[in-house]
Length: 633
Image: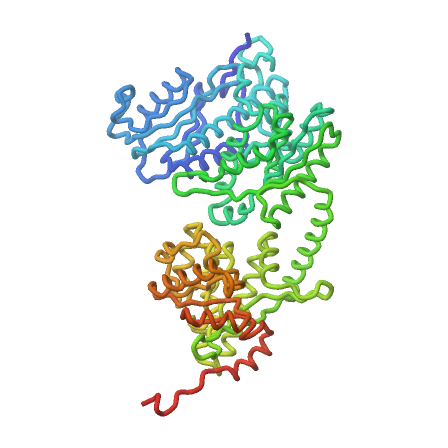
C-alpha cells in the first residue's frame, strides 16, 4: 500500500496550472451564479483559489470549514438548496455567514486519499438545475485528471510543465506505483489513453477547454486501436450556429455547452467509443459496434434530439443547430480517410439542408467546387466586386413606384451573375455574412441618400440575415451609417425572415426594437414559410409583412394557396399591417390579388431587378402624379 502524498510537502503548482484552475472556477461562478467558488485542499497548505461575486460578501470561516469537513469525511457530494431549513445541516447555519445554498464535491488522489474539495456557495437560496450539476461534475473530473497527472509525474520522477520541484521526496519509503491507483472510474475514455503522460503531453492530445481529445489525440488513439474487420462508423457533428453563439455568449459559454453535449452523446454510445473536438464547432464520434453500424441513422436522430431542449445555464439557454456527416466501412485500415469523408458529408449537409447524410464519392467533387466558389466570394468581398440591383415596389392602387428592394448580385468573370439567395446562403455558411451584409446595407443607404434628392417618400428595403441580427452591435452599426450619410431613417426598410423572429433570441429582439426606435420601417420577409403565426407580430414593432412568392406561383389554380393568402391578408388588415406581395409575374395573378385588397406589389410584371443607375433613370418615369388643384382644395 502506497503512502499518501501530502499536499504542500511534496508537490506544488506552477503559475500556469494555478491560472488554469482559477479560470475553471471563474467559469463555474459565471454559469451558476455562485457568490463564491473555492478549491480547498486539506493539509498544511491551502491554495487561495477563490472567485467571489460580491453581491453580498460571504463570511466563510466557521460554517465553510465544517461544510468542507463534511464533504471530506463522507467523500460524497453535498447539495443543500436551503441551508437555514435543512434538518441535517441546519446546525451549520450562522446568520452572519449568509450561506444559503451549497454544492460541494470531494477531490481525490488516484489512490483514494482525499486531496480536498470543490465548493460553491450562494448567499441566496439557489435551486440547482441538471445542467449546472453536470457542468460542475465535469469540472470535478477535470481537476481529478490534473491530480492524476501530478500523481504519475511525481511517481515517475518527472518534472512536466505543470509542476515545480518542492523537495520531490515522498512522505514514506514506499515507491508510488501507477498500478496502485484506485480512481480509474473518475477518468473519461479519452483520458484513460494518457495515464502516464506529463501535463504538456496531455494538452498536445486534448482540447484545453473541454478536456476532450483533439484531432491529434483522436488520430493517435485510432492508430492504437485494432480495427481490422471491425464495424467502424465515424460521425462528424457540426454545430452550424457555433460562431453566433460564441459572439453572443462568449467562448466559455460555447465550451461549457459542448461539455454538456458530449455528456449527452456519451449516454447514447458504447463505452469504447471515442469522441473528440476536432474543431471549434465540430465533434467527431468514432464507434466500433455492429448494432449501431446497422442503425446509425437512428443514432444520428437521437444525438440531434438531445439538443432540442437546449443547454440551460443560470442566466441564459444555448441551443445547438447540428448537422451530421456519416462515413462507414468494415475493416478499414485507414480511418484517417474515413474522418475526411465524414467531414465532407457534414459540410454538404449544411448546403443540402439535410440533418444528416452518408458520404458518397461525388461529395469530394461537390465540396471542391463549393470551396472554389467560397474562395471566389472571399476575393469578391475583399475587392469590392459585389453590387446591388433594385426591384421596384409598386402601389397596388396607382401603379406608382413607391419603393425598391435591394438585391445582392455578384458578377463573376467565369461563373456569370450569382443571385441574391445563393449569395446569402454561401456567405452565411462561410462566415462572410457580416461583410456581405454590411456592404448591402451601406450601399443601400448611400443610394437612398442620392435618390432622396429628387424623390420624396421613396424607401429602399434591405434584407437582413438572422446572423446579423444576433450581433449585439448591429443596430449601432446601422445608426452609424445613417448618420454618416445624413439620411433620415424613414428612407430605409429592414426586412427580416420569419425564422429570425421565431427563434425568440434575446439579442435579435433587442436589435429589432432598437431599429424601430431609430425610425426604420420593419417588415417580415417570406411570411408564411415558417411556422406561420401572427402571435410573434404582437411582440415586435413590425409595420409590414411580405407574403412569400411560393404562395403566388400557382394562385390562379390552387384553392389551397388562395385560402392561405386570403387568410393572411384578412388578419394582417385587422392588425393594421401593410401588406406586400412579391413574385407577381402574370396579369392573371395581379387581377386575382387585386380583388383581395393589398398595399404593395413586387414582381416581374412591374419591374425586373436592375442596376442602380438604370433603376434611377426609370424611377423618374414612375412617380405619382402631383395632386391636381381640385385635390389640393
